Image (cartoon, rainbow, N blue to C red; front, side):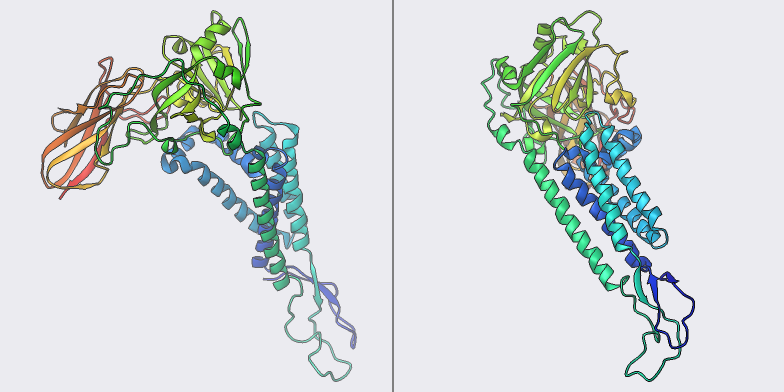
Length: 545
């Protein structure tokens, strides 16, 4: 229904009809609210192009939502949506914003001031989120201020009352060649088609402005040329050649070395930090005798080492996909710690990324002889931006949440009591030691296979302990030893195969378990990833037809 407010209840006989104000109908009013929200997003993105992409109101609110979300919600999002969890989050924010904006547009038909105040409150929420980020600067306020100003201005303009003739009937002073202004149905002058067209044009202009702002942000922060210009020196300590039989040749089995483009990515960054290596530096401080500050060229000059290593994510459910193997290249992290002189009582090394993420690694683990790196390359090329360019940490034997600080800019040697890194604050285990895992990759879950002999194949890992054996069983029967591919070292996964003989028609359950290099058998009890990694035997159900 349209809201009508008459300026007068009646007109004197023979007088001209008086004007009255009309507000838009609910559908048009909702469209006006959506236009105001579009203006907010467009203005915010444009302003963020001149400050920081992370200060965009939507990105800032999304980042705050990630930080404030319960651990169970985070784990569910990764398991349900995988590496698309960030797109789902942003899509959810835009959806909620659109629904709220439509409601505020309808509210503006009755209480413009209240609706405008609530749009301004959205800008205040964005400002709060931006200014509470770990690396916030005062100018991060600007995109949210621009968003609030744009939304309020557009809402005020589109929902202004329109004037139309008073519909009350009255005598005409004389015959008229056509219908009088006061007779018949009244078509609203402002709330109708012109208001719809204005709202549509505003949405289009806001989309163009926001897109231009995003493109400008990408161009201003583009480090592709700087990355391409990196010249990696040959390693002083190259990795030994991989054994020829390190990979099982079974269709459907992942390659032993994961292509960089296929390497998993799980992190909390809604916008990727873009760091020019010429401006990058790494500070090592805290409980050390000699604090250090090194640049990228200094890091390359330390002498680089290669490390073949399987990295896995603690978010993996049993049989999960978040694991990959690559050849890393970087400087020795333990050597740098010894150069700085770690003091007695030091317990953890806290790495901080350029976007404020903190990851803690036990000092005892770093100095026990394993080959931990300040990595600058993977698979022979400088790190991709999404994997931490220009520098990240890699520590074999630990999940990424306690070992893999991407976009690294700071290392602090400290104690457990003095500092809780990001994930420890949220209840995750402080050590992050990788659990033993064996996964069936072939056949796929719910696959249909022919009767007779069926090839079963998969991958197992227990990084820094190695894999000594893998077993397979069918329908709860006796365990059978799988054939292991060549062992490339304890820091890498091992592929395996098994021939299931005499597969009979019907539905069957295949299970696998592994034994690590210490002789410990993978436990059968299923536990979730939180708080220290999933356990249990992986299984798949297949149909023999």
